[in-house]
Length: 64
Image (cartoon, rainbow, N blue to C red; front, top):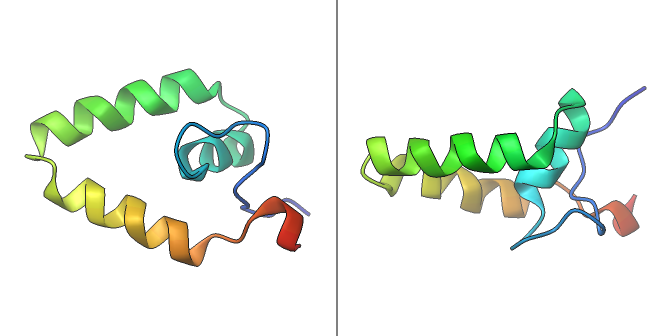
């Protein structure tokens, strides 16, 4: 069973996007590019809040 975690090896900031990429088996670079484009088009605020929420909600890989 797959679990959504923030991996230690795919971190740029907190590992949220790396964890999402790992969960869906997609390259993390693609997820990061889509996220940055989304930040630009949503004027930063909504996706930044979701990212911050992901930091607190998604557990670290070492905490499993």
